[in-house]
Length: 440
Image 1 (spheres, rainbow, N blue to C red):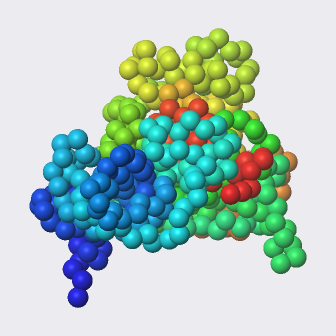
Image 2 (cartoon, rainbow, N blue to C red):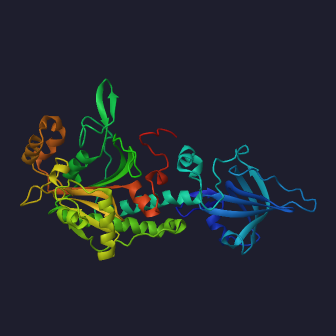
Image 3 (cartoon, helix red, strand yellow):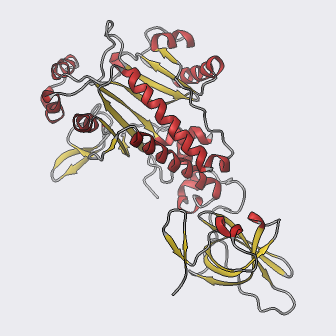
């Protein structure tokens, strides 16, 4: 019966040794490795095969001189199994290499990759990388970008689980638009119109009435005709909603803890080190500016309804210079620019109890306090010329007692792009969907 090698997760991998674990194997031991031919270098009497698996690289030495019957080394990106002897070599990855190998191809010879995966960095243009995403994402540096995302998701969930939140899953096919009817994808739902969900907003609010504290990780869809470096038609939204808040500042405090947990998880994963990027130190409390003060600070007109990208960049520089912070929260956005479910600022209802959080000069999070009384919803919809009947199933929860609550949503791709220093969110999205791209 073959031996079983335990992985760090406790799930055995039959007889296989990973690149990460090879340095711990005793010299002279015979080991079995599996992976891709990452690089093949042929010299006069020796061929170096660099094997890549999910944990790293292993150097395999194939002697070809002195009449030896050397095994064939398949082309790059062919999947192979290598059985050989562990041999110390300070110049090899991890200080060891594999010699006297037996090489078995697990597929036919791979075709030449569309990008050179063995180079330290991918130099192909972005359209080429996107067209060949399934192969381009094999590059170790590119793969590390998603490892940042995966670690962020782990930190997000772990932080909220520890704070008494319940993960929920909400529908992505809905009967009404969440925020407006202008930017939804309409689908034929058994002969009647339905829409791809713009956010889980209505459902996560309703679930606050069940669990008090909820979160969700899932796709959202925006049919916005944006062709920019920061927008996608489909992206991953990290949504949070919590009950029994005093105002939006309670929500902002939870957001601070979540981003600290995500940053810690990315730091612990080592993915940022592999990318050579700096993980932010999240302050104990975010610097906060009222929207009106933010406009004055950047020299924008007092009646400006929103912050432009250049304003966000200027505020990011201000936060770093004045507070040493990569983050700054802008609160009190005009009610006219916020969804109908947003709670107004007490004492001056021109403004809202909502916020945007900027990270390194880019909007990352939108959040705030919501209305929680049924009568307030009816009045808010009427003020906007909308019929409450269109939201009957959503409003039903508020007829039966909902706590004061609020929440936020983090765009995963924007977070990772900002962490990785990517100029375009498509660089950190394996299969992006936008105005022009529906494949691969």
